[in-house]
Length: 454
Image: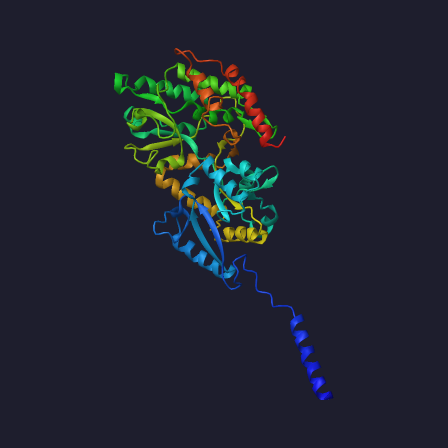
């Protein structure tokens, strides 16, 4: 009997020990349930063929290298990279921003990584829809350029990032066929000599106007485009800015800015500008080859909805600087394409997403990056003199947040239509820029204060 009780006791003790044993912990899988199953990292983008190297219509460079890199990252980190398109109700601008915020509030972010622009960083950050990455930069983001950190920082925290070094893309493009036909000096040569100032630009424009046709409907014009496009680049080349982030003050009515507006008014008064200049793609006159010079961005050259279908060759020259300007050449940038980490409850997955994104990039040295960019420039600008002019100024940038303050860019009380109508004037008489801008400055200053968290 004692043996039976002893056996029962040993059996019960064994059962107790087994029940008290801690269950074996499965490997962390980033929230996918099965520890051996790869963690899916979703990257949401507006044009999958530009970023997904396995897309049948991939339009980027180094496709095979990117494919091999992605396979390696997926294997090493036990992840599955999935590129997904924005839904139709998040097309662009406010709709996209609102959708990202809405899904964050519903605790159901659409992706782990969002492709956005710097113009949306403040709105997304204020609603906590994106996460700052400062704590992971020293571990995973060592390759990020300092200029990227500058344009991606909001209220002292780093939110928006990109592998591409931000560069100035704005400039003046001219109809090379028309230039040669009229026997005019190439403005890139004037820039190369270091003489491309406002007074020299005025002199060149006067000579051009004298030889261009004045034949009614077939009249030709020296300058085209919308006046605000000229103003946004000429103001900093006179030492001013539209919004000064360092001082936290709106600067579009400063003395330097007013001088720039008045210079454009002078050129308008001399008849250099086409009468109906428009943004980006340009007017029918520009498209038909009857406007000599037009403001634009480098990417316009390859875009079918901009200048990719023009039937004349384009030359390039930077904007001219004021005669009194002594600083470095600077170009405003805004609305830069960037990525953000979606803010979600799984913080470990946020870090993993940032790590994956960084390891998917083809990081190049500055020298390698410059060589690759120079090859792209040469393919589109053709002539070395234009490539050299572009490379001379493209790294001098500053982030212009005028369009990031939540004020509609073309609304009734916004800077663009206000300065455009003032320069254009009524009955051929231009208005007073300072008085016109005084009416809207408080609106912008209030928006800037909110942006800065004052």
